[in-house]
Image (cartoon, rainbow, N blue to C red; front, side):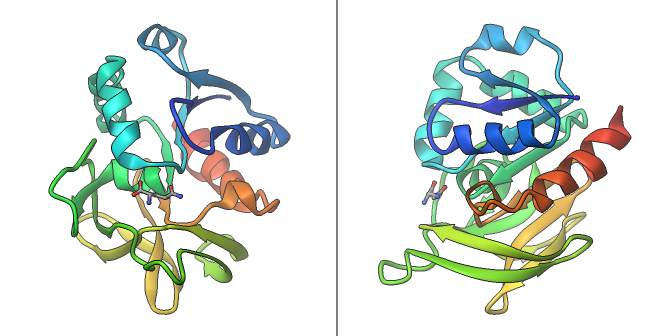
Length: 191
Ligand code: GLN
């Protein structure tokens, strides 16, 4: 299966390594013409959602990617990627793809706890390490979206059909189980 990783900004290399270690054929999306290659799944990495949103629009990739996601393309967003997918961002008046029924809270852990490591029970996966870097959390899931993992009673992972999001960074933990879940549960059945 071929997975496109958005490579405009942020922690995309780590996703590429993890996906490749699971046997996926990985390539980078940097400009509009990269979208001409067929692919079976999309990864939106962590980084800075405002910058990524701006670059997506400037490169002309924003609308084509939104259409593909709305048409059912499996997508996995981590951290800033979650913010790109959220229909609502509680403390930001700007949204981006706005396709997923989650309300995210940006930079939710404040300065002191900006970055930390925890562990969480991930539905359908088991216990996984969870690294947070100036992370959002999910204040609310609504509509078709379901919570998959909690840390300190806050929702940190969710799924809605073809869309999977984590507030944390599984690509930095060395544990490939959330990526495996994405490939096996969202990408493979859609082929
Ligand atoms: N704070 C970032 C944002 O608002 C997300 C942080 C991350 O992706 N590590 O986009």
